[in-house]
Each structure stands twice: as C-alpha cells, then as structure tokens.
Image 1 (cartoon, rainbow, N blue to C red):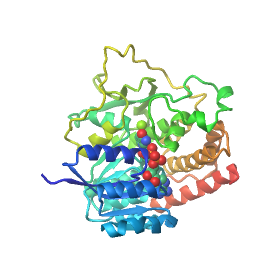
Image 2: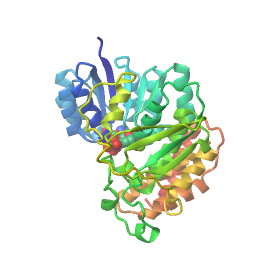
Image 3: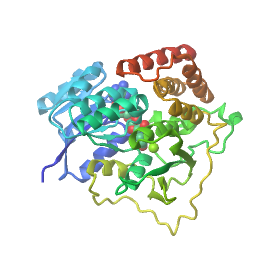
Length: 385
Ligand code: NAD
Ligand code: MG
C-alpha cells in the first residue's frame, strides 16, 4: 500500500501537533512531506528531525539560519517568508494538505494547493469565511475534495454520507457556549485574557479560544458551513449544547435528524479527514452514555454575544462582508490578547469596521485582499495601534 503524503501547514499549532500524533500512531499509512511554522523554530526543528519531511517553511525570516543550520545537513530543504508558503504548497511531492494555519494567512497557500490539485483537510475556517465562493469554485473545477476538520463540520459531513440526493432542511451547529455561558455584559466588561483563555471543553490555539469565548467562532462556523455544504443562510441554526457531546446535526426534509457524537477530542475529526473514507482504529476515550446524565440545549444569548448577530448579518448579506468581519475580528482579538482593548470592545471594533468598509457584492480575489487590508487598517485606527 502506498502511503499518503501529508503537508501540514501550521504544524506547530494545536491542530498541527495533534495531527502529528495521529500520524505517528499510523506511521504505516502516512509520510510527512512538508511542515510549516511561523515563529516556533524549536518545535519545528524537533518535528522535522522526528518526521523527516522533504521541506519545511519557517515564516519568520529571523529564524531561518537557526532552522537551516540544523536541518540542511539532514537533507531537509528549508524555506522562509510568506511567499515560500505558497511556493511549497505547489510542490508535487505531497498528496494532501492539512490547512492548519490560523487566520487569513492560510488563504493563499490553500488556494495554491487547490490549484495544484491537492486534497485539502481544512481546519483553517477563516479561508472559507474570507473567500468561500472562490475557494469552493476552484476546488470544484479542480475536482479537489475539501474535507472539514472543524469538529462541527466533520460531524455534518459524516451525517451527510449516503444522503447526497436528499434535501437538507437545516443544519444545527452546536456550540459549547464557551467559558462565559450565562454571563451578561456587566460581567464581560471586566473579563481579562487569562480568564477568556480557559475553555471548558477544548484546548486550542489562543485566537480560536478567544473566538469561542466571544461566540465569534460559531459565527465564523456558520459561514464556513454555508460554503462547505452549499446552504442558504436560513438553513444554518446555532444551538448551545454545553456538554459538547453532539458535535452537530442535520435535519432532512422528512423531519428526521442525524447527529454525530463522541467525547470532545480534535484528534478524531483530524484523523477522519486524513483517512476519509476509511475509519482507522483509535484508542480515543469512548463516550459512556450511561454516565452522561443529560444532553442539554438552549438558544444562544445573541443580545449579550452580539458577535453572533454580526456574523449572521455577514452570512446573510455575503459579498465582502464576511471578509471584513474576519479581518476586524483578527485585529481585535490580537489587541485583546495584548491587553490593548477590553472583551466587549472586540464586538465594537468588528461592528464599526463592518459599517465603514465599502460593500462589494461579488468581489474577485484581489478585491477580497483589498477589503481585508482596508478593514485591518480601519480596525487598527480604532484600536490605536
Ligand atoms: P494555533 O495558534 O495553535 O496554531 C496556528 C499555526 O499557524 C501555528 O503552527 C503557527 O506557526 C501558524 N501561523 C500562525 N500565524 C501564521 C502566519 N501569519 N503565517 C503562517 N503561519 C502562521 O492555532 P490552532 O488552534 O491550531 O488553529 C488552527 C486553525 O484551525 C484555525 O483556523 C482554527 O480556527 C482552526 N481550528 C482549530 C481547532 C482547535 O482545536 N485548535 C478546532 C477547529 C478549528
Ligand atoms: Mg468548531
């Protein structure tokens, strides 16, 4: 059996590290061909020495010499800089990209991989939020599968297997509610980053952990779902489910609902995306339903967590509005993580940026990049950075 050759873009992150654990346990099935990291040279070197890829990219040019000094003698090619990410994404030497870079930075390499005909295991939801129409259209033209890694979307993907001819009435995206479920603005106004970084059910990178606390993560996931599953905005419902056992559900036109369940463990959807359509054995902890007393559901509090309302507007209006929302959110989350703005200011920055930047109904790729840049500059002026 030939091994599947994997390129992990963002290998030092939470998703990237867990993917390497999955690959290590299934070493007979996978070869690691490419690893990339932005700043963590120490971990990138460690990963490269262990998995012996063909090439690595260290984004931060100041770290190039340190990485190259260790890896060049091991026959591992070392590249640096933003452009190198795209070049390496176009290499022949791999079969599937795990897109696990965080944020807008993941878009260009993913587009390049699609144009090179590579299968994509997609963790980087911002790619679809920013330019979902172009990404999905390119994938369709190249006959490239985009397999979701995000747990909710993996759940929906799994519920839809065998249902390709059956109309979907709606999907129900479940949300844990994050660390501030049930809290009101008078509490949230004083929230600091250390508290916001404590997620009850999942251990993830800093940006997505803050997005989970503000519910922007679920907003981004609504837009991600629209593109992945070709849905109308009113077919996407969000429901709070604090236990994170049901990862999401699909309701069909006969009223029947399918759910995908399990304990919250990202290694599961990562492994499934890498091995689809096969399932490989895993020793992941099993859900013991006899011990789970209750699965509960409630409506999200969209008056308090207004990011969800903003994302719903962006989803409904489309065009470059999701791109603007994403750019402003990336800036605002960065500022919050650097103690420049308060928790509730994140929503204010996103809202004002969405109002300010010119709406484009059917942007081309350059216009998406321009909208991203304009939104970042305006958000920066609000944050005063
Ligand atoms: P993370 O912050 O832990 O890791 C991000 C990775 O991207 C790192 O390897 C980093 O070096 C790289 N990176 C950061 N900025 C970069 C830049 N400008 N250019 C190139 N590389 C850069 O993030 P994560 O939690 O692993 O999340 C990665 C993506 O997966 C995000 O889009 C997130 O929304 C999505 N996701 C994550 C989880 C999770 O459990 N962590 C779950 C679902 C979806
Ligand atoms: Mg998710």
